[in-house]
Length: 92
Image (cartoon, rainbow, N blue to C red; front, side, top):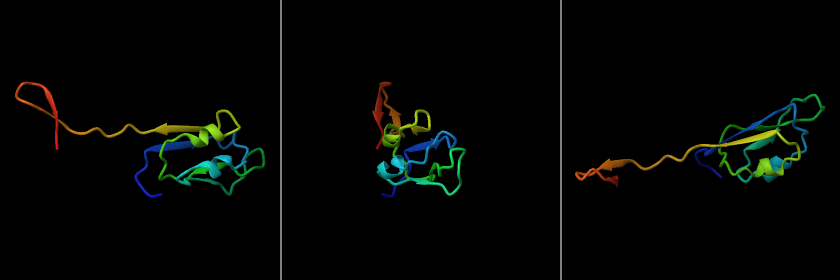
């Protein structure tokens, strides 16, 4: 699923248990298990840096509270032009 990222995920590597539930549940597949080990001796999840939709499914699937944070980017609004009467009208 290609496209511009609409969100961002941060994973606290020291809180992650490396279960992989977030990796399997991510629709755009932008999460992966990293090669390094954390203090639990597990491979923590990490964000690949692109294609996140900001859906939050990874957050809801994660059994470890606070390990994953999902940030949604604000949608870019359409340009607005002022009319002669001072009212706003959508630009084309």
